[in-house]
Length: 116
Image (cartoon, rainbow, N blue to C red; front, side, top):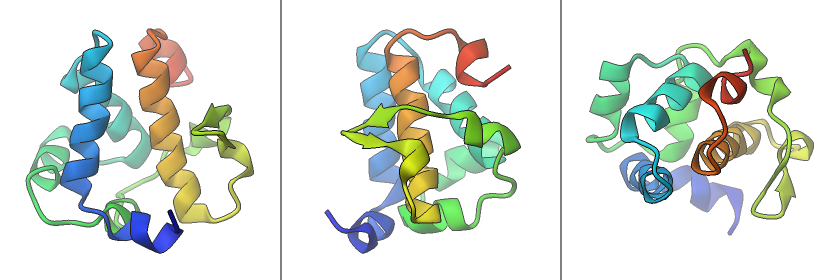
């Protein structure tokens, strides 16, 4: 799938898939919200509103209030792609969120996920 298609995807649909993945592994929507807010700087209320709205996945990241400085510490492979090697900045942000949700679904402690 090319980057433009990913950027045009409906954020609400993609986010629900991320939540479903975590919940299926015994985690909660609140935990997915916590890692998403940590990464992007959105407040929980803003995230809830966006997840019911019509924003694209690309715009969700483009308009993020404050991307977390520690996000560069997120390393590893998601869908066969090493996140720290993704060249396109917007796609790298998307992969960071994928990786955080993967770590959550694998049972990693929240302190480690949030790079504390």
